[in-house]
Length: 193
Image (cartoon, rainbow, N blue to C red; front, side, top):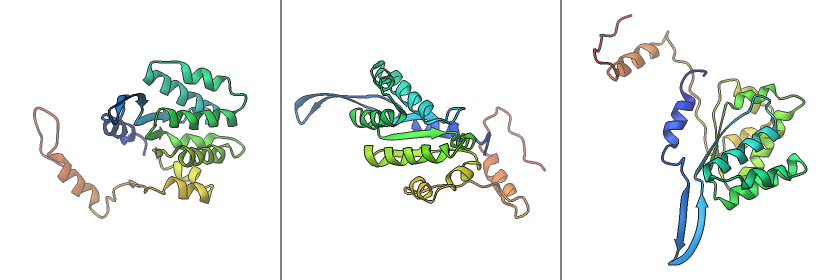
């Protein structure tokens, strides 16, 4: 749901993983390699595959302090070629997980483009062997439900759906009573209606 801290949770969760690991040795032999356990992206406003790919390359380059991969991607003559470069980059820097926020924005994609993006993400998962974590508002269901294949791919590792608390059944009151003790204020007040 909008404003329920999905992005804040993902940012806090990813803190230990949002790093660049510099490997210098393997089995007592010199081995220079950089690894990215976590790459965070956000579905761009235009919901295009090209924008998402360019954002990936820009993010990876920023994390590595380089411009190598964006330049390589810009030389690609098509989005399909850029997707191959993206898969190659995932292999070369050992990307572990790609987190994509605001996936519901794909619903604004025209002419079945959202399904193309989701198919592309499925291919990246399989070809590069990475994990994909997506977050979005309930509108994401509209996007993923367009394709049975993508439902299977998007939920193959499990999914969580956080629905609204039911006021009539007392869920909200139970939550408020439990959560109330965790106030981060100097002067705690009692819970009232």
